[in-house]
Length: 262
Image (cartoon, rainbow, N blue to C red):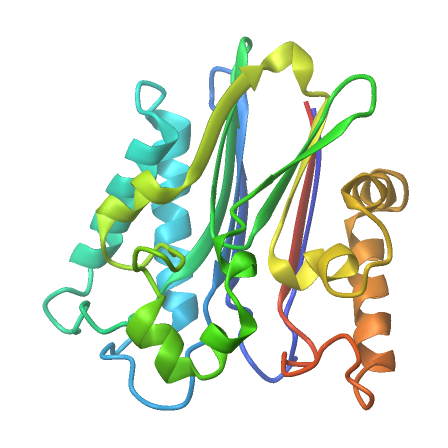
């Protein structure tokens, strides 16, 4: 098995809010890939004493431990337990009911000798590639399907859409959100390799339209994960004034790519 991991902050003067990990059980059978994209809060309170990197580090650590050791647990059960464990770590000091309590998107894959399981929550992405080169994107597109008018202000999003029916869901403090994730299982023989990405890296396809998901996978497999991040940075810089593609989005976002050949 070969893996490659690149995670780069959007701003060198700010902490990277992404988390990425690769886990290999001591048995040597199977493995897992975990990618989290911490949600940057707007200016103002979050009800929490802790930063987004504090949250993603703890949630990511819990997911890694549970995914590797809890082979009897499903991925939704693992996410639920990881969220609960992380919430318990700051429930006594923070208001976890606040809509902007620290939270993250999730892309998670686990494989054994027989199967590949996957889970995606919100706008991180997972690409599964078959032996014949067919690329299947696993996406939670609820946020992308919302009308732009519904996303006009952060206040509207928090009041009507964030972790609400008819809106979109992230991993925050409610373990029940794990039931909202996009999940599935495919035969191990049907997956040759996979790529997990935060939306700072999927901009190459979703924002700048430089190629489809197959082209993105081929770029990572051929030129490496860092090459994808570098190309995204070049596109962001070129659009920083016109903002024909970026529009109201931040110019540079944290970007994480994990590539694994199974």
